[in-house]
Image 1 (cartoon, rainbow, N blue to C red):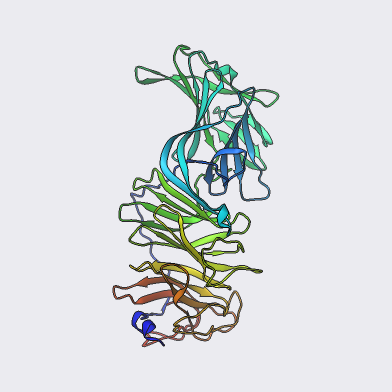
Image 2 (cartoon, rainbow, N blue to C red):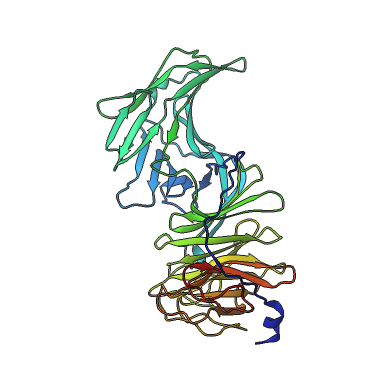
Length: 469
């Protein structure tokens, strides 16, 4: 064992039988909803879209003539399109930049990487009918659009159709209900108002569904010399889940209170940073291909506000900045670590091996070196300065060994990488689920096993079932 490894590594291991933990109830929890924002389309979506608002399992697309709800999961689902009838051909224009940016790393071809795409809170279709604008915006994580009728405009001009719907109906509460392939979403009852002396005066507005399935608005009496605002809300939570991420894998706070959330976004890994109030996206970053799934398992931050994600990918074309540690081909089920700068751009990305070296936990030291731990299901880990150089089991997805490793700050090579297990017979498993550093730089691992790990002065040994260490 080399001196560099000897000086930096110490294990504190305790074996204890798993028990059901007691849960503490939080009475003052306020959920944070990731706000809906619009991105300019610079190639991250179908070319028909001028702007888009991603969600966890699909995307809201704003095209030249309307709105598309485009699910990304489930072969049974199809897009639903709302488009204006007898309207002017108007290019939508973004308003109210949020100051946030989107980044996309969706293949291993750097020419396709997109970064610093601006975000906006509003998109306007001006004069879509004479004297009428349509303005899309978000309210928390709901999609809303205001139909702004200026003096001289006529709300009876407004007509639209919904393509891709199997059934349309106006419900008893005045909502417009849309059913497509067993999924239902609604346009909530339109709320209309005019401002008089700074006070909103309500105006009656309802949907009218004609026999040819076109939709228009019936509007009650109002002052035609003042602006009228009609405000429908698109309730698509059952059709497109409204969060940008699903399957959240990690949450962290930086020193300024910025909230980082890592998880799954479609087939990709998503990383979102929110401001300290949770009401504005600072950046939204996606990594992974659109054809093979990738997922995040762990998230950590360094003192500079850079974010590190450890996860797993089945994409042969997963974006990497270095292939020194391995590549993915044929059967692909590989671990990765990706580092993102404070603006969400990709600092580095690397696979952890050419086999199944699958991380479950990550931490980082003050020098910017990432440490990972997890499970290995084969003997393809590039061991360096290793505590244990040999894989202790037989290669199979249910015969895992624990592994742990330290990457250099550039993410190009291991400082050390090691297996950690005793003999693991077929059907047995030992894997790490946590890794932390103490103030002296020693490494502490935790995990689960049904065989004994390497033990020194143990409190207990002879694991006979599922235990933690």
